[in-house]
Length: 329
Image (tube, rainbow, N blue to C red; front, side, top):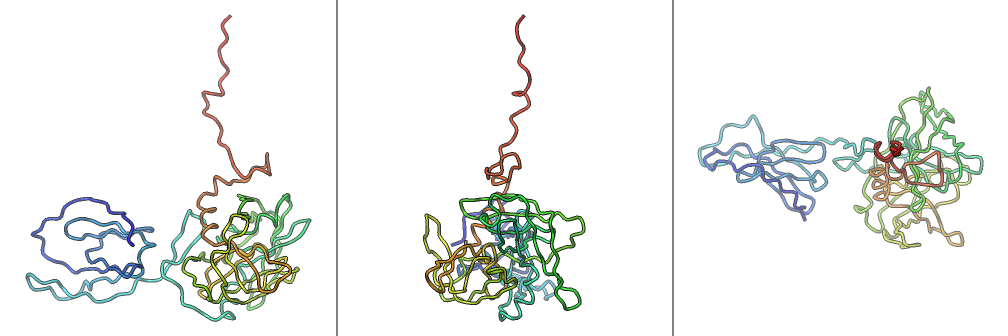
């Protein structure tokens, strides 16, 4: 159901002549018809004639705009609208990750691996290795907290595509930006001076998945980099230790930790982080919704070099509390 995000801006005069109408199709199989006044990054403003409605982008499935070049409508009638599909594009959230405003077209796994493989990386520390994926062309990447737990000497190996070939490059100037050890998520940043713009992935919506939908993982199980495993989503709400996980039949092994779980649209729907060792096809991933929340509130989980075990950053007190107090002679 459409959220109550109505903003009363002004009443429109009843004597205005009808203009070309725009139609907004909502995700809940409803629609709104009116004149689009403004299209912003996260919302659309529509004039309904008697009020102005602000609709969140996440509630919109399609926008059909009226034809601006159509012939004038007769008095008392509404001009017909020519359906025009909304142009596909990306929406940037929190300045650090992107989502698709129109669901990408589904593709086969082989095509997606060639397209997305460069964004999946190997994360190495003196005590072990894991996987990760780049969410920002400036070098921000996601991995599991347990992959880098207790470590500050971290390197990231990226496979760049050069003239149709993969070139392995290790980046050793890697900074921990934020950590959430309770949900096993970490945000890293590649700070090498010679680092290029990186290939990134889009974050999807795990809630849009259905049990039985195909998914696949890319990672470095047992150090075997760029390994692809395919399966289905077994359940979306597997409760373990007080947290909900995606359960999948895609094979997950040590070294896959921190790697992405993709849908067939090439969007990340989860972060692989564990498996049941005495069973087969029992892998688990952190839902991407938890990753988005972590990124949107990353300042609350900012890593502190002064206290590496503390996932929270505390601001300095107001300056007046730091002034020396006057002492009476």
